[in-house]
Image (cartoon, rainbow, N blue to C red):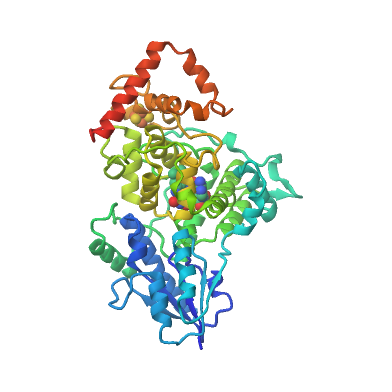
Length: 512
Ligand code: FAD
Ligand code: SF4
């Protein structure tokens, strides 16, 4: 009997472990578009179209390799609309010897498949996802017995393990991390490359119509749709990044500019996470670009650190700490997510810019996510669970294993400092230094208090003071309290009352 090989929507690579040893002449591949996955959060329409189009193209890629692919479209009358349901349906008639799959990336699905394994008539073999450099076991071993799980130490192990940017066992350039060189604000007269845009083919057009009809009330703009949806297109996007943007990636990594949504970022995360690009191959291309003198070390190292450091590390944390991690709320933040996270209807220019481009393109770069939308939610005390659902819904690269630790841990400090050593809270001063947003904002970044002052200024202080008992002993934060204590009482009161007024406006649903 043939085997049934299940491929999930974010496992779109012929190298996926489920296909190892598969015989195209005998085995069948099952891929299914199901409502359960499309609706567990209200995904951005562009994200839905991207995943469905990439899945349909990947089915074509497998067929070209000789596989028989049983592809279940969303609108198929027999579709049970859940992944376990589809496996059950396809194994019921006894046509298969067993089912093989690569483990799912989300806890929720892992639970569902463990349960499924006990109630289908054939064995279900679940294989590790070998697209990651560090297995969950290896991460657990690394974490065990450590007082602090800082990314930097994990990252060094991954450098040693891969040999990326290493010479004779030593990091090239004599240090592991060049982040201190990566904080340049950008200027508008820089040459800013734009990632390649791909014209939708018939498959993508069909998917766009399907999403427009089926998910009409979901957030985000469906068109213009320009994402790569095949491996060849995604590889072109990676080449473009390495040739045109990587050299300046490092220096301007933390910069933000009005009207420039990508700067020197790669815009590759959604391709990597879905399986169209192999993360390690991209890193080796970057390593080569450095060794051939095409890009500086701070850029190559910065990029490689994001992939073999942060990306692998957050996945390790996710599986180490789930399921409890999802409900972490160390700071007991309970405010509802403001409506402007969906509508962009706010006078705060930085937030409006980040949300507008998110709703248009299902993309914002890291500093926008961390220091604008994340920072605002943190200092305003927004419920981290609600914020997590927002990030999971609106970004084309969002899957729980990578999004949740970034939101709950890095951005909201809701895990009490497991992931980050200090909260990423900042006043308007930081945003002003790293961007040109404040120049055209209704609020004044230099005004510290009062109705026209930048809301980040007073909310920052209100946040620090609200949590003084939690942060006072943190060596990376404690100096802030010395500054506060030195302020005149009137100044302190003005900060507090301004923050209260902004929060009251938020709670009353008034424009901010
Ligand atoms: P670049 O800036 O070009 O970085 C290169 C690559 O490094 C990215 O493509 C990505 O694969 C990887 N990377 C960079 N930073 C991180 C990080 N912190 N964690 C994991 N990988 C990283 N990334 C996601 O892939 N999915 C998410 O759902 C997601 N949610 C986030 C939520 C918040 C609140 C924050 C602060 C960050 C989140 N990130 C997420 C991390 C990061 O912001 C994105 O990976 C990055 O912005 C994607 O754009 P890029 O491809 O242009 O990245
Ligand atoms: Fe954002 Fe404040 Fe600057 Fe306005 S003044 S853009 S709200 S940081």
